[in-house]
Image (cartoon, rainbow, N blue to C red):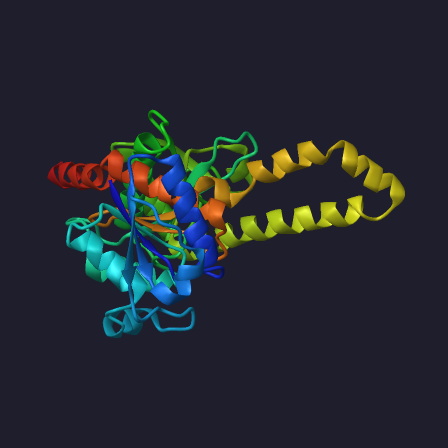
Length: 330
């Protein structure tokens, strides 16, 4: 299996990206990685490997670049070349920690959208208190959505939860301001009725406060709401760990207590760590495209590669395509 990786994307590129690539090659013996980027900038961190191909690129997409313009003008950018490799059949999936908007543009205009999918959705897997995790979509590929698009998000999220996360008959919930069927705005009310008729294990409305308890395996919402929920969860988790750190460092007594529970705290942090779940899949494209977190370290990149590998191996894009065709025929 061939996976293309953008070596220049992310806050810690290329060092952490390359470290993650090398870890991936060690852990997954069935993958070949094509690494795209500035060969000179990457050289200090590279080691020879028979399943690693380095492709030199003279340009890269910067965080401040306007996404669509950058993808269209910077033809030799690492992200663009990576996406083109997938389109040309030279790679089965791709991973980047770079500019989110640019990756969505590259996915849409280069890799291409599955016929019948109205809009792709950006979908990370987020941690739950029990460790199971849940898929949240959309988290920002599209700020607005129609009821029919929320149904497609639900179908794509359900297929991913089944094929990649191994959850049989995953529970799909519609994020809303209450659990009652009549709650919400026009979008959620119409989507609720449409989801009831879709080929899904739809459990009804769910509230944001219950997401981390594992109330659903797939949570569906529009990109505007989903992005705010995602950033609220990330910010709250970071804030809580920061407060715990301050408390445990505040006195000799608390420092001793911290020493006693150090391993337990590490386990808790790992349980709530986004890097353990990989990146956010851009669902609805012809091949797997994974957006790793911008601040990804080597572990996060490795898990994003794992996610791309699993999606390709389980033919997630093909299953989405077949399901959408069947749904349109109903």
